[in-house]
Structures are given as structure tokens and as C-alpha cells.
Image (cartoon, rainbow, N blue to C red; front, side, top):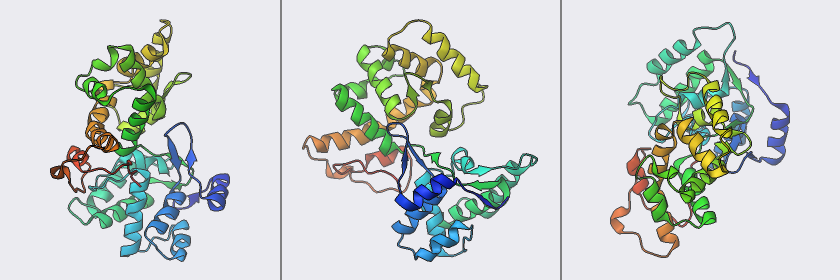
Length: 312
């Protein structure tokens, strides 16, 4: 259970180039090994530490705890306010096929060893240890990293620029759940964003696994199985719709736009306002300068720089 499964080709490429695997548009794939290598560099840790981590030797000390939290932030399973995104970290582990209790054991371990209120680095370290010891075999093949709000904002910024759509129009579309379906411009903007974010393609339709990774597990009353969304998308394809209309209707009718994309698009509006205002040379009000460790919506009010900064 505790051994590491290596993707040999990916590992060789990592050590020789250190490159990130870019798949479609803004989508990024990373392995645990790469994230550890990057975090050792960010934190200026001794090189020998990396070799220890590669064989699952994670010392219970302050430097390693900081490194593990950095890896969690880097791969998107750990938020800045200390929230664990279980569906993200789980893709880096393979449970034993005969083990039926791994989820409950892991949950109890996390509750016991990494309770809320503990110091963030300690919680990140103990949570990771629980998964190592209870959940399954650690995988090191590259996995898709969910996009941060900053990356989602950058993705929309790109589409607004390419399609020459004013920011005010985008703000208007996000003010109501139905508005992205109302005009050709709004439908094409939604399609561009979904393609750029790696959530949709004209050939494939929506990528169900990436949807679940980006937005979390669906509500109990939807997505009984992946075939439901596929069947819905196939039905709409048969209607002969243009590409923008087809994309918008699939995202609305088959992939629960109001519970997935709509909240994310609402959240990135203030980020885009700051970035695009500064780009146009207009000053940002001083009282907009904020500093927060939270992933809550208030974070979007803090002052931006000329370029959107990506989360690790």
C-alpha cells in the first residue's frame, strides 16, 4: 500500500526537463513528484530533502510540513484557508481493490490527527499522512490540476479580448442564471471560456471528469451516472444547433450551469474588474487594498497587479 507507482516516461521527462504537462488550452497536468520538486525550490530546501520525499520519507518537522502544504496548494487539494478538497487529493491515490473501509479509516484519521483549528502546515502534513497510511497506494502519474479563480479569471479575460466583448457585458451576463443563453455574443463567450478552461470541446462535448474535479462532487439529486450527461449532450447534438448555441445549451441543460459555472463566473467578476481597470490605466481605490488568507469571496476584492498571479 505504501509503495510509489511511477509513470516511468513521465518521471524521466520530469527530471530531464522539469516541464509541466500542458494538455488542452489552460488545462495543466502535474504529478506529485513535480509538485514536490517545485515546492523544494520555492522554499529553498536542501536538495537531499527531495530525494527523501521521493521514497515517502516525510520527516515530522517544520520544513517538511511547509513543503507538504505547498504541494497541496500547488496541486489544488488544499486551499489557503485550510480546507481539504477530498475529490482532488483522492486522484493521487489508488485504493486496494479488496479494501472496503479505506474511506472511513481516512476520514476518521483526518478528524483525529488534523482537526480544524490546528496550525495550517501541521494540518496539511497530518492530512497527507492519513491518506498515505489509510487511503491507498500513492500514484505519481500527472493529474489535471483544478484551475484557481485567478486562472479562471485569466481564461475569461482572454476570451473577452479575443471576442472583443466589453467587461460590462460579461458582468451583465453573470447577473442572472439565464442571460448567457440569450444572445449569440453571450453564448459564444461561454463556449470560448469552457473550451479555454479545458472543460469542453466541440468534438467531445463536456469533460465530465474535469467538471467534477473543478467544481466538486455533484449534488445527490443530479449526475446519477456519467451516462446521464452524455445522453443529454447527444440529444442536443441531434438538433442541428450552431456551435455556440449547442455549447451553451449543453452546459445549461446537461451539466447544471447554475451549480457549477455560474457561481465561478460570478466570483471572478471583481478579479477582472481590478485587472482590466489597471490595464486601462485607471487607478484602483486605496480602500480596495485587502490582504486575506481565505478563499472566500472577499478575497476577490484585494488589489491586483497588472498581471493575474497564478496560485501555486
